[in-house]
Image (cartoon, rainbow, N blue to C red; front, side, top):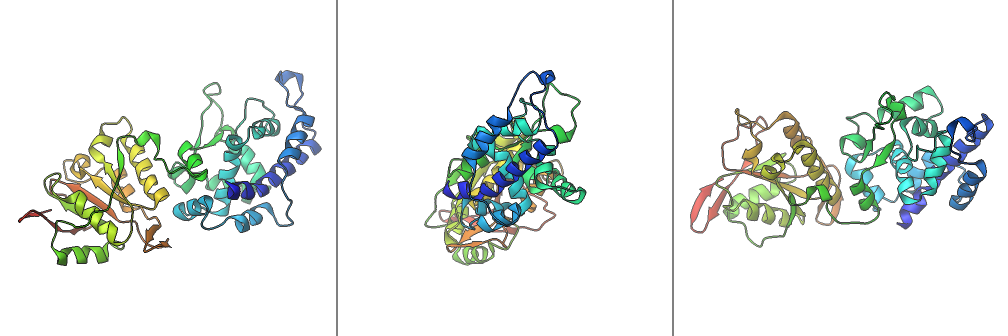
Length: 353
């Protein structure tokens, strides 16, 4: 929390400068047509209360220097490949949930007391004072950019203003990301019953030679596939493999996810937990997502193949390696990305998985 308080100082500087610019431009939030008032004196009082130590550096450059790599914000940036501009957007959107004074300040800056979270337009005004920098902000808020792609923030739609443009849409930080930045270790509530922590196993029900081969390749292969009947050693094998590399392992029940009204959203959130906890993922009941051609839906497949997050290996944070994905299913899977298959023994009998 102390680190978070430190890094918001450059953002406070940006907001204070925006208030001064609004005053210079003749901003009048007391216009009677608006019917509601946020006074300049009130905003000034909030700014004085929130003021941090000023910096001679540009705010975003200061932000880059203040973020500690091993802080929650630093780890978040590393996990999701966030730029300094991304972090500026994230912090601006986060501030009203840390201190409600920012709700009044944002309402003042947006000439609308009902807009208590920053809109895309306000963020562009705060972070970009010319066409190129405003376009850079816009680019970081596209659906494929990390902030929205990984559900770190969301654009909210005001149902009372159905014809408003995207510039008028407020941004909010996802609750799980807020909790993570504040130190919480709890999984996303939306994943209740879908994701569980798998504890390390002393032995795997596969031959030592196979185990060594897969263990050595675990951090470089895109996926390890464990076919075979359900509950015949896949969970134990995955846990033992991860234990070798001191990797936490999360189990995701794909069959249960498929019964949800928005399975792709749940899978995105589950993969995000892998990023946040720097864990390997075990996708159980893989066969439940395969189509008639024995292929996963494109959206689900892309989530698995493109997942690359830093993971804890031997106590060192390695951001340039892929996170191992492990899938388990009971049917043949015609993969277009050749997986590494292994055999699992149950007692004295050997089962091919």
